[in-house]
Length: 328
Image (tube, rainbow, N blue to C red; front, side, top):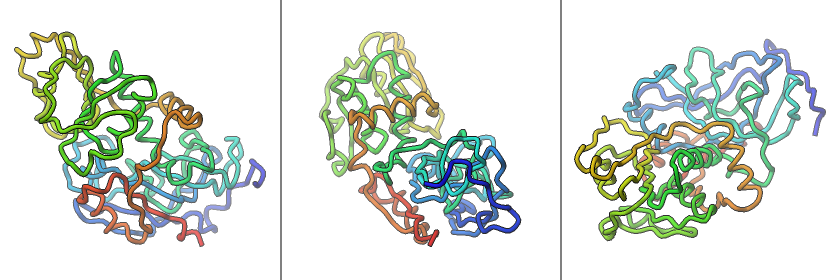
């Protein structure tokens, strides 16, 4: 490795100030464009991206135009908040070294092109405080750290571990694995037979075959607003429903069943740095596995087809874009 105090290059002369990036131009229209990066400062690091993940939750909403308004939201926009790469240069104050592998939860470095997420690009300029050094052996699985931290945040939001998890996509699987790692024995609902495989330490069933109406804590990652009343009806008295999906439709609840159960409903928002630290420790000790969650991998040059597959193919749990050839 090179010394930690690597001098950042002159931004006026070095190709480090340009990047290839996925750009969602407008709903259902995506391009791979050459963009100019903002000049790196003393508190920034420059990251050459190796892999970025495609989120089938929030990024699908950006893709189909159903994402509710948030500050910074709009088109054109660089998506992606699940990125792993290597430090290409650093201002010297971060303690990070050139060549070190890091996780990046998105960036905003693309000038006039929005970077509300901003991780799907070949090169990024990021404040040093936003990147996290990771172990070499994590490789592409490091892209899953954002979802793992989201899963941890969701189960920490409830007053006790979920005994029912709704949805067996990547987030549902990570929540179930975390609950099992902490001694729980959750049931997972999944309607799609193709997604009922891959359980590690828990059971996955069709909700039509579940008669239980005494769950203490239900964690819903489906994003289906219409399920709320059914899930409230499955709670024990005083039980809690944790909403950990992303819901584009208004949420409502029939009051009498919720009243009779004295139900509690809470919302889990985005992960925080302590959540990331917690799951990194579990991964490092082997208590949490990230295996068998990445199912599809394509070169970043095929980004358009990759996004369409990620959003339409039920067999695709996690799609990864490989950016390594862009640095040759």
